Image (cartoon, rainbow, N blue to C red):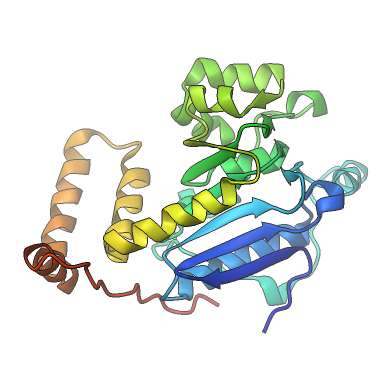
Length: 282
């Protein structure tokens, strides 16, 4: 049993919550933090009662990016540094080992369950990338996002040059990258980066409530397949995407979840769908 040092992890009422737990450092990410987040997401994937996961931060920030002490070590070494945390090494999601989902935080897209960022405060650098690669973003009005790559002499890192324009369009993406200005909740919502605008202190609660509502109405297998469709088909032409969806649709018609969905509608009762069966990925 792993004891996490830099995050908190809970799973109850169908929803898992990962809280980055370094509030005195505005939840800045270390190698350990990132390894613990990956491990906790693997726990969510394998837990049949969990419909999805919320990622948030303790205290007044979501995540201020990479811990500056870690950045200093990288600068001294002239390269990335890694520490030995073998017990935390897992490969959540991505059963086909799609090369698009092997990096961090791009592996978020290969997870088979929803991942929602509850942005409760400062969200910068790699923390901004983490939130950008979540499936949805619930953002509090007083929270701020900032790319912060340019002021560090860096490029748009961690796959954000691919993902951000798909959320906000190329012009807004370049504005966010070039200016590194702080963008508050309402503007982030207007741009399309934030999917829900929440009152202060409410993002986590609203994100968890959203997932519980989804759990009441939708089959976990359907949720998994729709996430897979969306990300796989972003770069495909309509014809091949349609053909693949048709094959998957034929498969779904033969599953018990389809029979249950029809029966619950006809009988006017809540559906009782099967949990996802996911093998241990350790």
